[in-house]
Image (cartoon, rainbow, N blue to C red; front, top):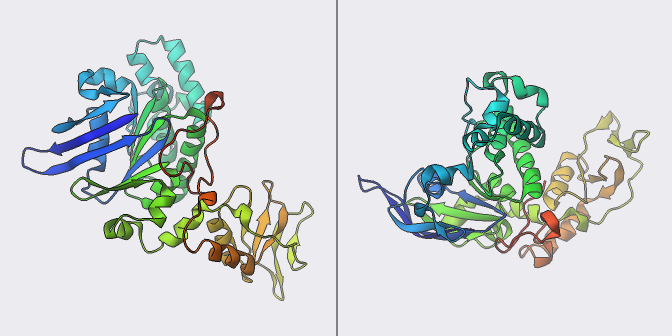
Length: 368
């Protein structure tokens, strides 16, 4: 566990970047620091690995004050991922990933074997190992950055807006990859972003910081959306926070009707479109077993008749959700996200079958 106890960072010119910050980062969970520019997100993150030292207060890592640990030793035990990966341009990808193992004295064969293992784990072709960073796309470089941070199997991973420099499609893919990795590895992750959608998608717990480096609210994503602490948090979450709340309600609860004859399907039962006088029109799909009510609503809005097509994991039609069925759930959840709906997309048990760590009111995160 990482604990901030009354931490303040004041610079020589009098600027206060972080002001009396107290919070706990649970072990084995993703904690996201989010807020506008100038709220001290990155400063708070960098004080954990002593890239910046606090002016007052203390930060402990599993009960030990980080100021008692030699900075290079501390940093070798903490993975660190930044914007645009920060790879060494003169080193091959395999050696970039093996950077920390080399510093720890691993022999070259062992370090490179670990690097090759991690290449595949972050979803990259092992054939990229012999290339240089300039030969990779931005998204590939970010995956290499994550692999490098994981190379020595650190228990803590710090991520400073790691996906902000790539396009939205690649960014969504990298977010999904991080969630997949976390479900396997159960690291203690502190993630900094200015994007509230990214914070809600990735965080088990979200800490909203206000300008001046003060903590405005810290809670699970669903609680944050349903119970913002004040006008600042409410404004930062945005006018569409009601729609975001739908991400925490499983689409399993949507009542399905049999697919009507107007829905054309192929020989394998996959949807082709809605039959109209002018041919086939557009349609939207969702998977009740994996998606949220927000995804079901999106599917309905993509269909000209307001009917969402429910499919299984292989894309075959299971039925349809008519607007009336969606309205039933909207009405049921109008007053908030009930406890039975919280924890949607809960993380699977960690290694050995233990339950996920407690990290706030919910251990779930936003679904599709």
